[in-house]
Length: 167
Image (cartoon, rainbow, N blue to C red; front, side, top):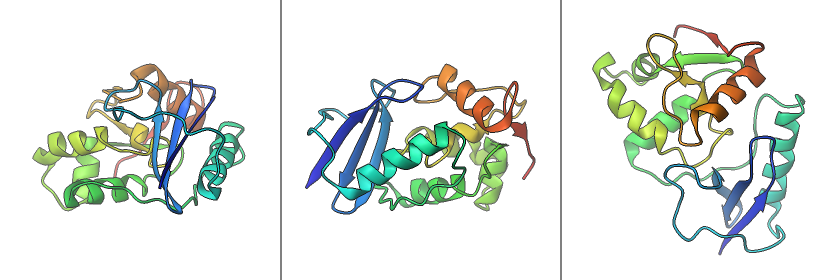
């Protein structure tokens, strides 16, 4: 059974999606690649959505830097590898798309494919796709909007944006 719940956050409403005992989605309402037909099923009935909401709340109140909610991410094998690599980027750090490609053992020219997989990340914030920046350190696309990406990086790294770390 698929369950969805909409809840406020400092950056706008988030939709939590769970199947069985796993979080399968966390989206900003109306973001790019927002799944069609995703609507709230009411108050959260599943423990995983309650746990995810609690951890997101702790994140925004500076009480959490690592998430432990159980995830199930549906995607291609390549997307799965990219999303796993995203979870290796430390809180307060930022990698370039080239860094991310190299962490996968791919050529730097794979940056565009890595960026495409990054943009299809189905679990915002928890799988920290916001921690990936352009080669020059500039903020580039974010499915939730560049303003939200800026806010998340600032939240994690202090004034300005997160510290750019080289892989």
